[in-house]
Length: 234
Image (spheres, rainbow, N blue to C red):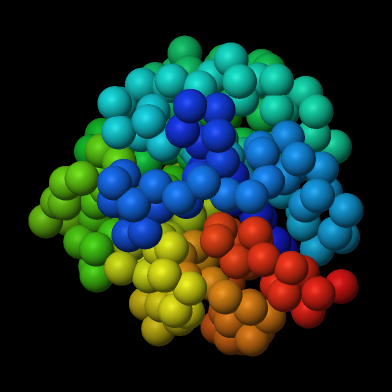
């Protein structure tokens, strides 16, 4: 089975989920962040935990870094951090405080030269967050779109020393309606980097479909908060 990376999305130190990235849809998850880390860590298929500072993404700078630092200390599983990472200073902060990987979105998409420089400085440690509405890139906490497409980015970053690309189809996110397998496969075929799928993943059959098209890992959000999902994984 492909790797599982359960998601913990943070607002005000609480674990929440949004639907299609709309902040007004905020829904509190049943497990507090630290409880979630301990729960997810028991499954051998969980090779990483995906933590996102949602308000950091919206306000273009970290807002939960102190709390995230404490969560990293409590985890026995590698942690990757995203949300509001726009500077080398922030990358240094998270990596020096125990994060295994960081996710760069808006700054990397808008400033390819900076992204390339950061991947040269931290080879394999930086993942590009490729969030899109259909094929158009979304930035600034998914509140804006650009004309640049996921295909443009896949070609542009082919030579970069990325750890991989995390592709999220925003139209699927938080809906529990299944991932966009077709578009994810296109990215697998276009990019030399490992592709992680995110958005809409419901159950083990979705994971199998993604694995069949060459996806390396899957980020599971809302489904990871259901007992049914984990019963099938055991």
